[in-house]
Length: 138
Image (cartoon, rainbow, N blue to C red; front, side, top):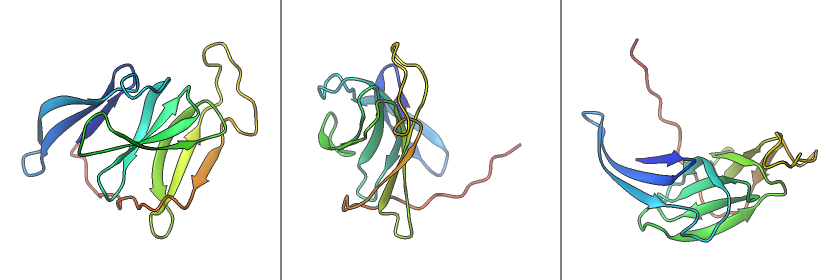
């Protein structure tokens, strides 16, 4: 299981699906160690186990190896600075949807129509995973 702390980085945990417990927290990657400016925000995982992370303040989504820490595999540039989250969609889960923000950030007012838009990225050669249904207990 992976967890983002926007002020720190991405951590990986062991997860026991039967008991629902997590353990063995390890810092998986930080943008600084990968030489990338910005703040990690939303993320998703593809069917190969790699992470796709939105980077606020860097106009990009990064693909990070899910099996080897601190390993950058790819970068997708987005034409606005505030890249906030990502998810896979489309009929075959092979389209990456990227959300962006439209707020004052670091003293800069973003410009429309690029800021605050949702982007669809195709041709990446990967697929996401179907959503897992679950029920929260009251």
